[in-house]
Image 1 (cartoon, rainbow, N blue to C red):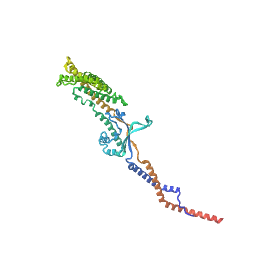
Image 2 (cartoon, rainbow, N blue to C red):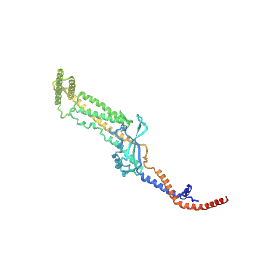
Image 3 (tube, helix red, strand yellow):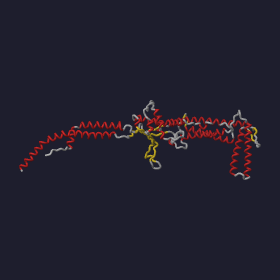
Length: 450
């Protein structure tokens, strides 16, 4: 009879059982090594850290900084902001990020920011809408742990608030009045009133930007208090100054007040010169009338020029009257009986214009201080979570560990079975030989009886 040479499943299990502790030990070691290799070597730097946040400051919903420049969320992760965050460090530790390579981070695009979208924030076009929040993501390769990454990202975002405050602090709230005192010609009051009007409109625009006057701002900051006054109260003061301005402009148009330097101005010479100009206007008007009557010029050209000369003549006559002179039809001017009163009225008007100027300067300075305080108090980064979220971009350590254990178990089992099989087979064959001989004798006796 032939000897059995195969191996059964039971025998395999028997051989594995004999070496089970060795096989388990080897499998565990291989699994641990594989897991550590993946987690500490292969996966190192492949994960990302992210923060979800909202930027809040007056006007952000309009996409504008305080000075009117465009707020671009991408600028949050510009290279200069990263460098500033690194230099700033964290409170009490200016060197907290000294090992963070922001140059490489920026150059490789390993930090990015995107608006958050949500299916629940549906637009009118029935598409995925924006939530108003942003997600900033950075590679873990630049940090020793997620706590350092969290601190760094917050420092970067704080730079944005710093920029907001720098914008409002850097604004010149009296730019329209910069050349006010340089207007010293005879028509200076007209130029000065124009500058005051521009300044007043600027102030109203700055107040409206935070109290929602005609803008898309969602929160009304009119009740914000600065040194006992609300923003709305300061706005109303600026509007009242506008009423005074309107009154002064109307007076200027009616009375033609002129800017005078009492020590150097020769009133008689001024009145005489302006009177001559009035006479010239009148002569030109007469000439144009003759040309029109003779059909030399068109009606449109005639009417246009007549309006210009009439307005010019009216202004000159008002200027003559404002310095206390009376115009004569022959193109001369004589002192009026109430010259002193007229001159005093001219001086009073100038004082009123200067008083309005000072009031606008004061209101402008207060406006800037109040708005600086408002932006400082209301500008912030609102975080959705306390720390960073880890985005796993590497191979699963758990899966690798399990796979390593299984593979190591199988290989170790095969190796030990192969090593122990010859001895086991020899022992098995030796035990089975007597039984086979007995069966052979029994078979022979059975054949003889037949």
